[in-house]
Length: 293
Image (cartoon, rainbow, N blue to C red; front, side, top):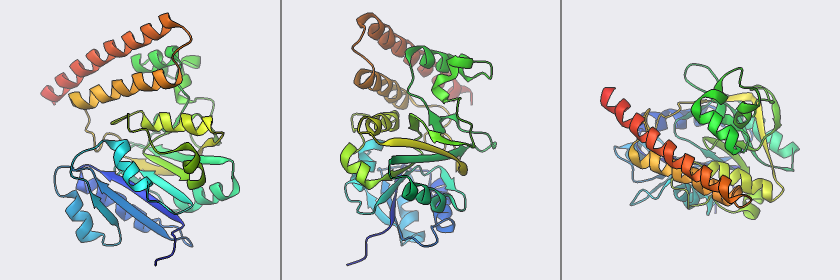
């Protein structure tokens, strides 16, 4: 019987073999110096030859092919149910780890037993911060400001609350949530919190998971001292298809219902109506962008 690894990495793949290949190469380069790693790739019945590429070029990867696309949360859970290592990294295939990231963050986790999950600075292709790397749980006002673009301006002040602006991008601190593209999780915390909620098919499951970690008294930490490249939209595409848009907005409604709703019926109704309006706008914009691109 093989020894228990020190860390397991889970990558859910759906097409995009070039991105997946680059991600796995980065894992080879940046593997922790003195810790054993087991990498899982769960192929979510994606198009193309991504799974074949993994089997051919990365024989050390534990590959599992699903017969249908079960959604991001459910596909991750297939591997999460089987992990035995003390740490597990949920990683997007459109990421590339920089040297030393895992060594650094595993050391942080060793030194901070109160932390259940840690994320790092995510950098887009243009070198700027992916602001989803560190987030606060959105209030209705902050969410409205973010999605209208007002909360993304440098002069937004308190309306930028969703982006956790009080913590610098290269600083270290506790945050409400990190991004599902890179979530290093303590298995002891996972056993208490539970798996990803499969009621989210795609999007918002990471925000929900972070909320549940906090509910079980596990801290979520952002460490901006180390960076991972995130080719944002690399697997989902630059413009969401209707199904993606639908699940994104359904996820927003589910998160609000599970974690925010119930205090004021009028506010709840306004939030759900705003989500429906935003779905209509986003669907129209995405369809137009796909036609003209």
